[in-house]
Image (cartoon, rainbow, N blue to C red; front, side, top):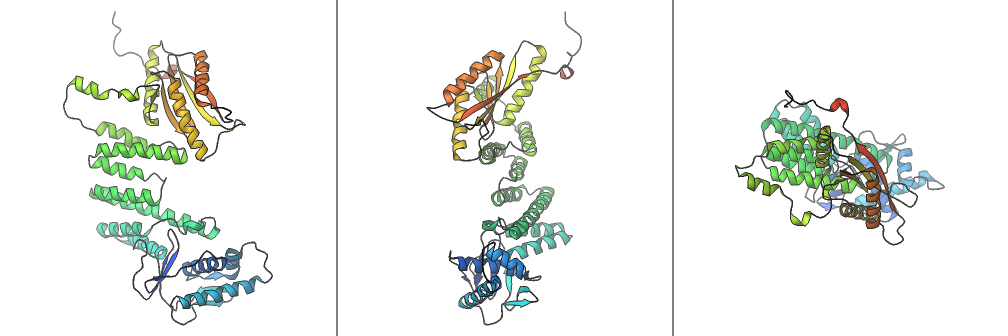
Amino acid sequence: MGKITEREGKCLQVQMFGSFSMFWDGKRINASAKSSESQFMYLMQMLLHNREEGVSRDNLEQVLFGDRDIDDIHHALRSVIYNAKRKLKAAGLPEGKHIIQKKGVYYWSGSVPVEEDAEKFQELCRKADAETNAGKRLQLYLEACQCYTGDFLANQAATLWVAQETKKYRGMFCVCVEKAVALLREEGDFRQMKELGMYAAQINPMSDWETVTMEALMSMGQYEEAQKLYDDTVEMYFREQGLRPSDRLMKLFNDLGSKMNHQYDTLDNIQKSLEEEAEDFDGGYVCAYPVFLGIYRMMVRMMERGGQSVYLMLCRVVDSKGNPMKDGTVLDELSIRLGDAIRMSVRHSDVLSKYGKGQYLVLLVNTTRENCSIIQKRINWNFLVGRQRTGVRYYVSSVICSPDKAKKPFGKEIK
């Protein structure tokens, strides 16, 4: 079904996913920003979504009026319902008792048919689960996914009953996508799997659906697109939530490296392609977290042979009281500045990676504890501006190769 559009039809079309809207006979029933109009919309949302069980008077009064001090709250509710009936009539709905009350419970009478996207989504999920034919089951799951166009009444997430429904439908959507992906994987339809992953990531962002798209790209051999998607996803998660990539995304990234096939070439050309661009060579080596993780583990292995002193430093932006800063545009700007300050304060051989909002990891190679303090002063010099009240807190730890992890040399010792 997808998003409800203005089309002809003698039924009341109701969109609950994303922003709320109602259409009658191809025309949208609008509401202004007035308080009375908002109450009309809240009333319709509850009655139309709960057509079978109805809504108790107490629940309606709580949602419509909250904790407002009203002398006669029952009278206030009757006024809202009376005005709602007038609004529906003005919208062109036929004469009739559309809203009725039985024993303290209000119902949508069913005098006109209602087509609700949330109800249709739930019905499609039910049919898909019951379908035995794999092809038909897949089509039902895909149709259900398209029917879900966003969180349930997204603009009213703070309302208790809306929050409960949001959680329920979001969970159903996730299950629906996962089942559709499993069927597409079995059929080898990676093109549609890619499209589904992109759709799910758009509708339900920051939920790791990029892994579906990345898997599909890799299965189709589109490795460069998969690499770009990975880089963009890691950057987005850091920027928006300060999160590291998920274990599944990192596994796909590692698999990507093993599956990328290159044409035969000379060693000189291969080595040239591995070198950094000249404009990227100033300061420390900046890399994504999975690359940093690989470098760290490699350094630990190299230390088995001794002769190197390596330190791991965590740099974190703090406020004037020394507490980690919270989300906001100020932290975003300071995070960028801190990254630049670190890069220009360390050597070419040192490695740094963004670990989250306002946080960076730095791997300092062949240095001493005393030099770590000198580097911190350099970072402060490059980061602090004027009478800036924010600062940086540093945590430093020596990187040590545990004796139980050290590997013995292969074969016999050569004398």
